[in-house]
Image (cartoon, rainbow, N blue to C red; front, side, top):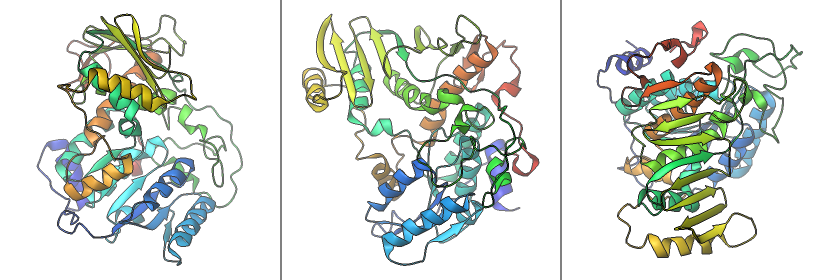
Length: 431
């Protein structure tokens, strides 16, 4: 039985499996050989971040677009002053390369789970962009497989490594705003089925490999614009490849909701659709007696019996007992000063202290040496994105969704088809 089949059988049948034989814990000064899969806009930022880490050596890049692939190879070669960087079209050339220790996955969402599984079955630690999964079935499979593999997987939900989000969540977890009753999250709406017309593809793009597990369809440049990206491509707005902005930006803000409510090992008990079918805002997720509604305010807004917290990137506000304690909702002031005020007043002797990250990539690299779980582990990343998947189900089917977060399935008595939890895969890529 090969390693691929072993992983599939163990993940689905519950057999124990330990594949990781990472040596960094024993050799803390070893160079970490890193391979990148997907060289689009987000990857450019991550590549520079990994370049800044002294123990890292990027040794391989992969992209189905020859222009991006060669551009990335050129950047890596320029960094190290040689021509050694390997460049591939097929991601398996990286995941199955025994000289590579760590895989960074920055591809369209419909590829993430398949590529993570390929990496961990070959004993590699993984930094994977959010969302970790395209659907709930993939989340369940991935959590199980990563746990059994012993590999370290960091989800690219980097807001957990930013001070404003950590402080906001510590305030919530320590009851500073009292019992949380409701809240809001703000980001764009759900995706839709792809209806783009056929266009002629230029040479240099492996379109079939770009599609991978998604249904076969003709090329369109909106899905896969050629060359080096300056903008984020809009494949994310089509359900065959992404989950709209619900799983794109929602992956970030719903992750903070999970953190603030202490639900990293759990999740909501229901999702509800908007009042009017077709609306792109107004759906909600329910945690017992706490309702979080999509489409109002900034970022994450939590309201409790004694106050409220608002937080998004670079902005933060806290109100307690009707009085403004901190307010930095307009850019241009001093965010650190406002956070200092909140921490000094309410968190100096706090019972709940959340992990303070040294930086998202740095945290990941520290964890591949210590073998401790990173700040956004595969379990955290999978459970957080399940919240977004549930919200999408409520939007797409315009119905209440009862949910059992312990069993990761519909609530007892639900008549929703289990097919809603997964997707169809092209034969070559079934998992």
